[in-house]
Length: 124
Image (tube, rainbow, N blue to C red):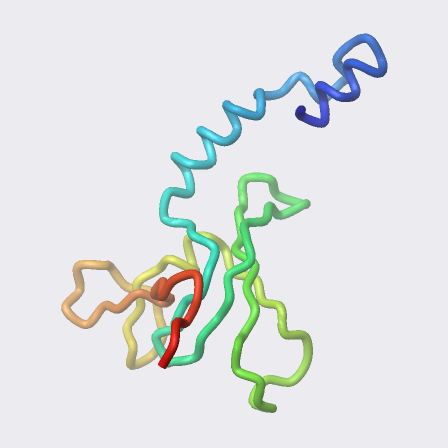
């Protein structure tokens, strides 16, 4: 049951701001807008592995969707917080491996910034 529907059943009417899309409509919209997204393990074009946890929305700008992920390398290379955030479009961008700048997918030297590996690393 959606949050708004629960409030409606308690309050007897749809609370202001909760007259939004049904849960089914939201799922369908997300599936269309974020069809590339899969939670799991990704390899960055430079080699490190990352566990993608999920999608998030920017609390200050609802039109901006981000991907939340965490590095799987347990060395001291990166100091500070381990969770990372990138916009959806930046995460799935194609880059020039020489400088990391986003370029068109059809460029001869373009590689995906992150490549999906799977749900697990497997044995080996």
